[in-house]
Length: 274
Image (cartoon, one colour):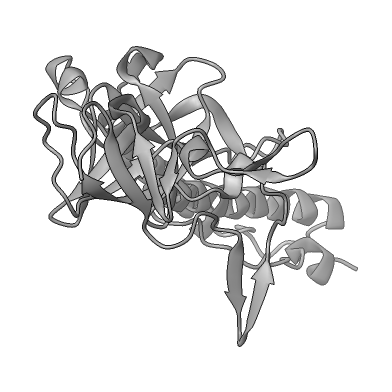
């Protein structure tokens, strides 16, 4: 059973990924069948086209366009299958509707497709969760490699290209090679900044270790408070730099940001002055 121009595929598990296990219960995340976000994109190749050769084989795991499995309501309110429904659990799939295939447990892009991982925005002055139009190339292709853009590089992309795919346990944006408009000098610059940050911390530690008072004379509360404030500022700045260094290291190593409890320090001068 082969189509002339189309692949024949079936959903890997279900047509919708709208259920989540919570303990021994199953939580339904969304009951709207027309919402594309929870339509499954994972499929298995059942047969390949007869008209041309392809790198895909029967049994390969692939990622496809969400509209293939999505159902919809007609004007009478009745549920309908997509136009690519074949029979039972089988669907036609055009070659340009396949974006990824798995080989040796690794996802590879098809054609000019590539996948970008968004970067968290750690700027305290903005409400944005992610940095806009910038991310890390997680799944590239031969065209990008020819331009010297490789997986792991920090890249900028055009606006409105945030088409979400869940690949493994990562949320990635699918786009084409010509949507990548800039490559940033990421790894080298970040590492140099991190090294400079460590040097700055060492200098602040030297300031913090100096004696607050250098004589046994009677010291006024104001002078003691000003001296302690200098120490406090040096210590707080050192901790702030170290925390930012750890955040940037986590981004470089693709680790989740660690949530730390805030610690409130007691003022030294307030404890000594009368």
